[in-house]
Amino acid sequence: MKKSVLVSLCLAAITACQSPTKPTPEATTFRKPASADELIEGSRKVLADLSNPQIFNPGTCATFVNGLTDYLYRLPADHFVPKTPQEIEKFKAEGVQIVDTIFQIRVTLRERMQEFDSRNELPAACIQKVREGIQYARYAEEYVLEWLYQNKVLEFVEKPILTNEKPNTWTNSRFAGFTLKTGDAMLIRGKSHVSAMIARIGDEEGNFSHLAIIGENSKGEKYVVESLIQKGVIVTPLEKWRQDKDARVALYRQPDEELGRKAGRKIYEIAKAALDKGAAIRYDFAMNDDDYSALFCSEVIRMAYDKATDGQYIIPKYRSGATKFKGTDYLKSLGVLKDSLFAPYDMEVDPRFDFVAEFRYYPLLRQVRMQDAVLQSVYDWMIQKKYKYTASLGQTSKAYLAKFLRQFGVLEDTLPKYMPMNSIKTNVQFEAVAKVLEKNIYEKEQIFYKEKGYLPTFTDMLAFNEDFRRFDCKRYEAYEELKRKHLPFMPPPRDLSQIHWFFSPEGSCSK
Image 1 (tube, rainbow, N blue to C red):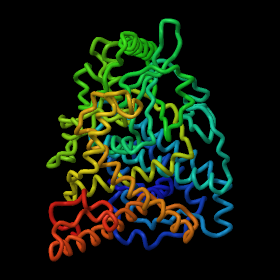
Image 2 (image 1 turned 90 degrees about the horizontal axis):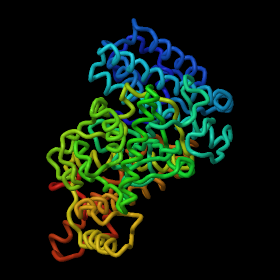
Image 3 (image 1 turned 90 degrees about the vertical axis):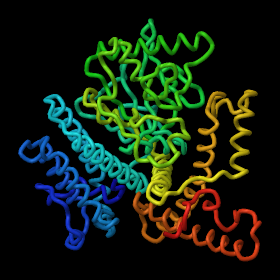
Image 4 (image 1 turned 45 degrees about the vertical axis):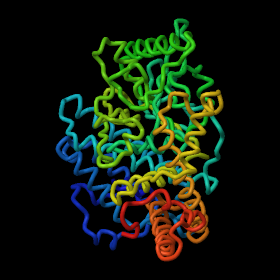
């Protein structure tokens, strides 16, 4: 999938895509310099096209979105970065309106998908491209928002999650003044490397890693019910939960309010009953949502609506595939054995729920974007270049030590006693690579910003990772050659190669 962040700003500006076709390589050579006017006018044209059934319909949905994203992917990375003093001032004045318009493109794109589905006219290709289009638009909004914060147009003020107030929360105009309701689903992006792993685990990648539902007790008091790796299924008073800090939280609502309330009450009762017995329902590392004996995060909301309707309402309507890692032991090492799964971000394309609003915690956006870039690179290397982990004494020892300590109550907030050893080892290995790559991105970002005056895009960060991989590979292969000729028992070159001594392909890493 195309992963440019900055170029995705253009999603709201392409007026040449009224009849989407595959762009030619020459498409990047005739663009005028960027301007806020171009973004605003272009985004309005896209909105109009999305509302025009002659242009956007079930038959053209996939090619329409693909035509936009392919075109954008070929544009220069800095196409919409204001450079002159005049452009900068214009962008400052119009920036919030730009975010408004791109957000509305997301809302409209999803509502048209709901419309197609209601008529049983929603093709699988359209679902996939809607996922992609939503990701592009979200990245665009966040890049503009960060530019506006950096240039003092917006001021960050900490607010509870999903307080109906800009710039922390952008709201679908249909739900202006919304309050949180029982049965609401909250799609969340956490701030850990594990969160990045989950956000990109499916064949259809997403921007989110966690899913929670608002439950309700017999007194009408609201709680958030969720399953956490380290604790299993827990319940937290809603207002306490809203004080937490997550990078993104998107709100999805069941239009049937009574059904939502019934589901929220049912899952609260199930979760609370287990907690009252002294043991939370275990986290399901196999991500098998057909078996409710253990529950992973998405499975909680599936169980809520399943049990509330005696099996008549099963979530999600459209699942993610889990096949891209075939030929590797990665998913098996995590315990995932099925060819499909309920990835948290499948809620984005479940047309039976309405998209209400999206909250962002500005200080974390940069961090999770870097994490996404790191995991995207790692996954790409595993799939395309056949990279895999080899056991290292240090990492294996760390995994066993963690497991041992947990049996005695240590690391209680990090992992449960029943977490499979293979899952612990895989997480330890991923974290070791992720920390190295993330450090590299931070360093490269500072240089990039000093030279250019704006932050690198997602594509730029992928390039940073690839440059580092090649550099680290050369060092490792030079060491291996030295060892082969002179010192066959030399220890791993940790001071020379930072990742290839435990994460590399079977053959040469320089290919």
